[in-house]
Image 1 (cartoon, rainbow, N blue to C red):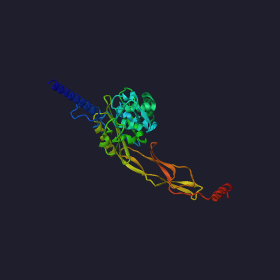
Image 2: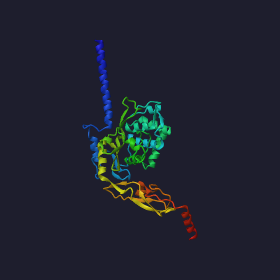
Image 3: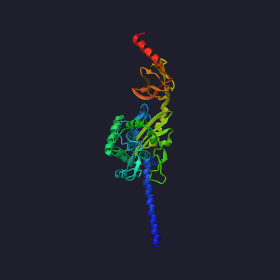
Length: 404
């Protein structure tokens, strides 16, 4: 009887433990997904009353939001875009950018005790563990590993404080001047803040860096270093599955920040970036923004590859002039609302000297908008031009000197 009672008591304890774990993990999961249908609507009702009458998307539940076209920075929609907000884990975009700009992907990073003990979402890194920087970046962006951010910060700058100062400095250089970072992961700090517009600016720069899109757009994969028998990671950003052309970028959640998401999608050469901060339904908000954006923008080819764009005088050549052509097509966004005028500028030398080989780069064609370059392509020689014979070159020089 005593043994049976012990087994019964033990089973009851296990059942209670399992129930507790389900409650804990269920709550944690709910913090990263949509609220349940029966969640109180008081907060949403209050936000709806605060929305400006001229808001073009009043159905959005985010306190702050912005939608931009990346190549131009053109704002397609905004709500409280310059209000200072807590960014939560969207902070990790800036950590990724500094790592891509200042580190090498095959750098070996040693995990410190400080990194191992980082609170919040984790990769379960262990003190003394050695991983490639690239592996830490995938873990940091796919499953929001806070421990990875500390390891990266210490590797690049020796301390979290020094790295955070560099994060802020670089953000300001990118035009994100209403941003201040105190850590590389986004856990709450009163002096750790940004704006929706600044996060969009940071994301725009990210997409210009080699490797950024590969990392933030990775849906899932097998990684041998993952501390799990399956070695499997799946990106927490559901937008990658929910929106056509989705290619990024980062989720975030804390009690102080609410649900935050920087999302992105690219179709027919048009790259859109949406930011929602302190959103009740961040997935729905982000999908609505991106889909609305693609209704407002369409691609337009303004330069065709192979088209002659200019002619250059040739010195010492069997021909006196060289046609140059755009190396490739240039596609720019055309906006259905707003007046946007592109300018095409050809940067060419005053002349070129033979010999010249077909396909050689002789200049650059740049597409400008409001004084900023939004696209470019090389200008290349469309034919080969041989040099004149030595005696003919000397004869022409003598003619010029003696006016023969």
